[in-house]
Amino acid sequence: MSDSIEDLEIQLLLEALHQRYHYDFRHYARASIKRRLAQARAQLGFPTISALQDRVLHDPNMLPRLLDFLTVQVSEMFRDPSYFRALRETVLPHLRTYPSLKVWIAGCSMGEEVYSLAILFREEGLYDRTIFYATDINPEALAAAEAGVYALDRIRKFTENHQKSGGKSSLSDYYTAAYGRAAFDKSLRSRVVFSDHSLVTDAVFAEMHLISCRNVMIYFDRPLQDRAIGLFRDSLTRKGFLGLGSKESLRFSAHAGAFVEFVEGEKIYQRRDP
Image (cartoon, rainbow, N blue to C red):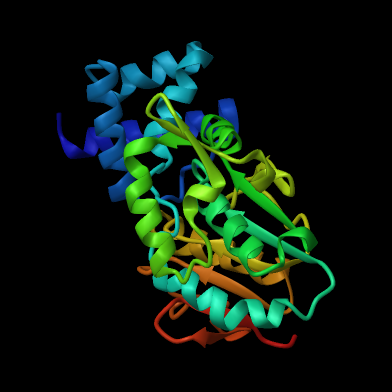
């Protein structure tokens, strides 16, 4: 099949997903979408993207399976430990001055960063005055995040990252291990609101002191990146903080002027005074 026909099939499938189910992937980076749809087509057993589209349109049960390919669910607790150390040592001292806090983990995937931040805030004595908003567009990922259960063989890496982030306790204090799985303490999500939210279509929903959106925008095209950053700008309180992934930047954004780099090298920014 020629690339031009496959590109047309992809365009039609993305439009169909938007029209039928209100999931908008039309402005995700096309190379990434093309690669993921090729994996979905092959692993789900369809000869063409058009055949996959036909099934998704007529069988809503196929939608969650396709979303698992289109949304990235790869993360780990305290991923990039120096980022969490920077939050601990330079951002939280500022947040400590507020009587109450709101933190948004945008694109929370299966919850690894949610629990990382919950543990960090607990270790620093800020958990009880913080509400965490954990959002994603994938309902199955949100359900997994809320469950807080991970394969036990991942815990060694989680523990290593936690220690490197400046952890003040043992990660084992926060989970119970059994039957090859680690279940994180439900107290860590007692102040977490798990919710569906799309950076593509949805609006601001609260005023935040910290937004952490890491390794999400690398899958967006430039206009969608600008939309997301504008949303973060409008969501942050005066001098609030924004954390991005190690391969993401505000450098070429139309909204770059609204932020100053707060921690050099860690992609942590602070909103300028309006």
